[in-house]
Length: 358
View (cartoon, rainbow, N blue to C red):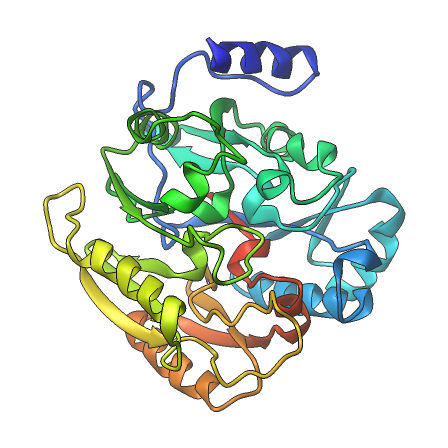
């Protein structure tokens, strides 16, 4: 009932075609991030109050990431109309500038999650978005972002009843989704929602058959605005294989939480009934910063067509992480971008990108 009301509102608001069945019922499924892309969607930072180290540094970082991804695939950058000229100058002429209103530039979280099926059929799931459990006061434009992107892409949308963000899910492309309880089941997003109900809707919205639950960050140990997004913990590198990140210097409650998340992963099976192979990687624990929300994640990278665009922090761990990730993707070129300004805002490269599958 709730989902059908959301679809009616989307139609009356002038968005594009809305699906009258779920992606699962339509035979659609979220593909793996290493599948072929048509393009990458990003959004341009435009508000100084969102960046503790300054807007100019954040914009330079976004532009560097956009140019790096553009080497491998087209990039479409959503930009506040008054910032379009500046964004074009910094990103270059071969990055498409798409002007319409946004509140913040974390495209992974408020953009759509694309699903695909036989004969090239595509659609997109639009999650309900409330700015990570109401942590930001202004989010009305970003709550519309997913459907606007899908309309521009000419792709129909499925409006999910779940309040969720794209950074809360990872998939193997074969029906397995990994997510965290601290996000999907958080009362600040989905009050009163049972785990079974959340699992059913995740499967319907993503064409999945198996949900693997990790605790995430239920106690807020990591001072993370997301409440524990999965894309700061791990990623699939191929079916049955997960790259899992942790801080080797963690102690106390943080070390226990990391062990709980890893244990949940070790005891899980995927949609094919396999135990997961886990490859370990350290986070950028050597990076020093005065900012509590600094994102030290190396697994928060973008899988482009033929390439990996991953973070660097100017620390010795950059080379070690590059070696691990290159070994996971031997046929891809691994490019590192300094993300210090972006990390100070609380996220990484995966957080600001969203792949549109071919």
